Length: 113
Image 1 (cartoon, one colour):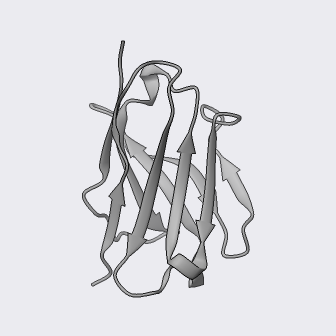
Image 2 (cartoon, rainbow, N blue to C red; image 1 turned 90 degrees about the vertical axis):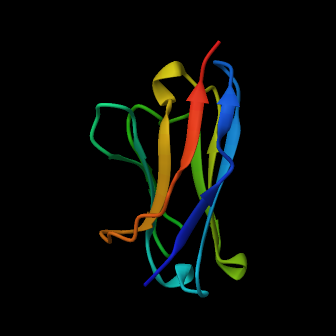
C-alpha cells in the first residue's frame, strides 16, 4: 500500500503563511502528477492545486495568486506554499497521486485571529 505523509500545518493569523510538505513510502512521486486537496468541516474534499510530473501547475480559483505548488523529485517531496492565508482556508490538507485514493492523515491548517 502506498503511504503518503503530510506535514507543516498549524495555527496562523489571517495574512500569514505556511509551507506544507508531502512525501511517500518508496521513491515514487516523480512518476506521477500530484495534487494538494483540502476538506473543511461539513464540506466535500476539493482539489486546491495540481502539478504534473513535468512541473506544470494549476490552481483552484479560490487560491490562485496566493498558493504555489512545487516538487523536488530528487528528494521525493511535493510542497504547497500558502501565503496571504484567509479564515476560509481552514481545513485538513492532503496530498495524493492524481486520480488515486491513497489518502493519508492530512495536516490541519487553522487560520484564525
